[in-house]
Amino acid sequence: MTRPVTAGLSMSLSEECLELLACPRCDAALLAQPDGLDCKACQVRFPVLDGLPWLFAEPAYALGEWRARLHLELQSLTQRAARLERELADPALLPDTRDRLRWLHDACRDQRGRLEFLLAPLLDGRDAAARETYLALRTRLPSDQGLNTYAANLHRDWAWGLTENRQSCEIVASQLPADAKRLLVLGAGAGRLACDLHRAQGAELTVALDFNPLLASVGQRLSRGGNLELWEFPLAPRGPRDVAVLNRLQGLDAGPGLQFLLGDVLRAPLAAGRFDAVITPWLIDILDVELRELAPRVNRLLRAGGAWVNFGSLAFAHAQEAMNYSLPECAELIATSGFGDWQAREDRIAYLHSPASRHARDELTVCWRASKTAEAPALPRHSALPEWLVTGREPVPLKQDFALQAANTRIRAYVLGLIDGRRSIRDMAKLLERERLMRADEAAAVIRRFLIQMLDDSRRRDLP
Ligand SMILES: C[S@@+](CC[C@H](N)C(=O)[O-])C[C@H]1O[C@@H](n2cnc3c(N)ncnc32)[C@H](O)[C@@H]1O
Image (cartoon, rainbow, N blue to C red):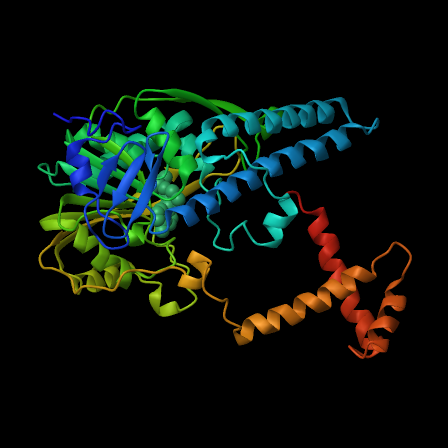
């Protein structure tokens, strides 16, 4: 039976779950406080927002980062609605076009309100920076992990993916040992698989870990039987009104023992050796790190004899080709990280077949299971970003590449500053020559290329 830890803590974290948590900075146990979880050793408080523990190594940095991404998403919706409003002013629009644009416009505005409501605890009262500032400072992360990156998965999980969800659960469950009662799902997303497995296994405790607060919030609400409505914006809308579809996300009560956590799977805020099974659905090939680094980290989380069940694709896309492993290489590689008794199955499944979209995938998935047969060699703690970036206290190093990028930016800013609605490309080229930046004939070609890029960008749908 799961018992809540403290009456004051704004979440229903059970004692059993609290025992499994560990500080992502030093691995010490965490103490429940009325408004968060404390690591006494590091003197850090990990906040709990709307019942979701934020267990990132630098919680303040992670909060700021995701808050900025949320502001950016809200502003993008507002600006898209404003653009649509301008388009709607055109009297020459076909009646059906007008109807489609109006529908999309209303959906964007409505979605904004829904996200604000859903993620209200993440928004603070202060004014957000301008969207342009966020974009200029690359808040729309270079790593393509925005708030909305896996929105389609969310709708699949809780709106229209009944068949896909059932099939995924059956495949993964077929590889799970029947006596696995403590499960950990890494990169759980909106959590449907975690919820289904928790029920199918009759698990005592299932931890669903992800770093995306939109997905985790939705997962947490819906797996407690709640309902929500959110707009889906399909990639290739099927009909005119499929440009935006208001889906009813239908919750399912997972019963006690399913806990969502926010944190980085590469620095999982969890004690070593406590899980009967670790499940990695559609995760290993989208991480920045290679499998050689992930495998020992999964090993560390499992008890002796525990199972690693990996499910999904092998669409690795590392720049270094050697890291883009085939299935037999995966088996060989994880054997060096304390895993044995490998077995795998392959299934062709429908993937993200939204009824409102013409775009859909079929995937030949792999689902392997491997048992922990030995402790993997210990790895140093993962650090995705250098300290000076995370804490913001140390000086920013003047790396050679940074100096180069700064010079580029100055030149681009100079050329952009020449656009005043009067100067031609030739005028600008002469100015570049006068500044001794380039010969005028060469400069004209370069400026033209630069402006073509800008024009292309401004025609792209969702651009700054
Ligand atoms: C391809 S999606 C799969 C989501 C879910 N397992 C599913 O099948 O729908 C990958 C998930 O991993 C999460 N993720 C990626 N890198 C992560 C990291 N370093 N730490 C935590 N979650 C991560 C993403 O937010 C996303 O939810």
